[in-house]
Length: 87
Image (tube, rainbow, N blue to C red; front, side, top):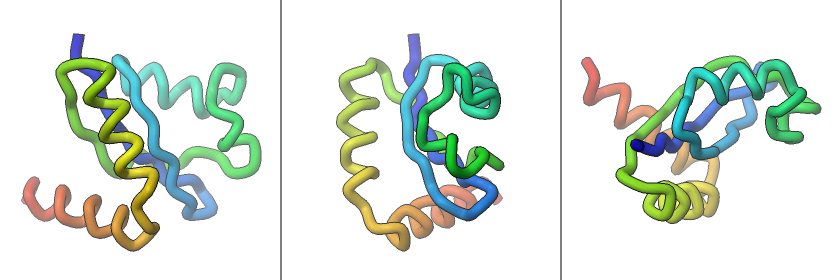
């Protein structure tokens, strides 16, 4: 089972980083706020800006920790780089 690391931007522009095995389901949970992260109680999720796959939860969690330590600008640079690779 592949694990996804993701970054969501809220409607107020804040960035949230998390991991899951089902990104579509998890995004819906964040939007409903019943099973979503409490982070979204203050600002609704808007869009998934970034995602990357990992072979197991351990690797995804390590990467999540790395990204959470990044500054906002470093996260935005990571997102921009991934978007440039897709075009």
